Image (cartoon, rainbow over all chains, first blue to last red; front, side, top):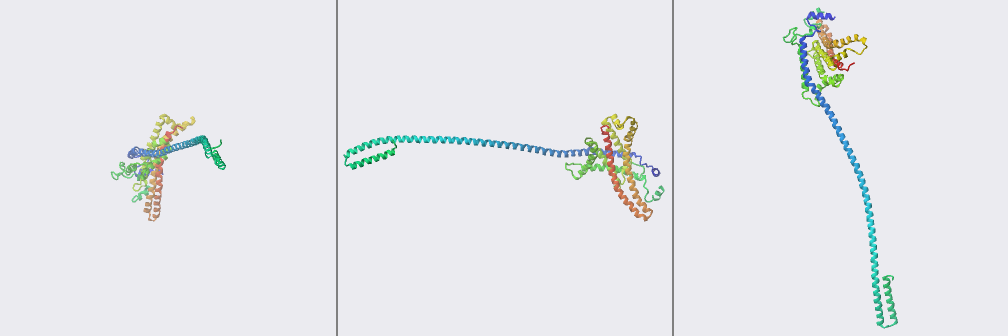
Length: 185
Length: 265
């Protein structure tokens, strides 16, 4: 069948499809060479570059995001540390303040006690001094009164006994009143 | 057979013959056996121009976020680069060879595509010349890659001497030589050529067959319609073959290069 076919072909023309035509090889090579030159020199390297740029853009984006994430984490860590530090600091300050307040209270108490003691002492001293002066006054007054009474008794010349008695009693009353007011001595 | 074709030659030549693959020269017009400027060479240069224009226009100003056209161009390259080249050769060598493989794929694909494009309707690859020189390039390339990678003697030792007991080597070495260095370029070239040749022949048979049926007897017209419907169906099949053969040619070239780059047996 094939040979018959070939015979037919040979009869109708001198073309043999198995034998290449050299002009066609030449044209094919030229066309393919030009194609290779243009595509491999100008087009595909550019595509590779675009691919690389695309990969770079994506990976760069991921990298940037990772860096930002790490930075944020670090900051968070830092803030946490600072917060903890601040907390302990605050606790320390509070304790200190408490201790200070206690100290101050003790101080104030001590001072107040001291003051009260001092005031009491001063009062007692003053009282003693007053009593001293009163006693002194009384003494001189009792003397005067005695002198006065004696003068009166002498001056009246013993008018009547009742009056005399009244006078003496009044005097003694006065004296008693003065004595009870002046304290016990 | 030839007698019948002569009878019908007045209107439509049937059956189609090898001569249908060799249209007369365009410049000078209508001359037979002049191959300088024919439909075939015109189509080859048209494919070249179309591919160059496509890529230059779509990739004139590449952007990081691609436009639709740019995406199209990138996906052609990305397909061959990722699912052929890198898949078979690894990332480093894959990227190095991807531009050539993509060029090869586009060239074969577009030249194949002419066989179903109206008015062209013949693939330059149905002439053995084009698959042949592409196969020779692949052949030279995989041998050169192997020699460059391993050195001359080591490469041929690797390619020819399989790890087998010594007494079987006299049998294996010729077989390896035959399969690696003789059959490969021929199978590569003939596979593509024969597919495109047969595809064109099939379409011719069913298209011209319809006319031949009507010419023979008007009553056969329904059969002629069936024949033409077959042509349409076969055009879809042809498209499948076009894509598949371009892919196969590229993948086989890549696999030969992969064999050359492999680290010994």
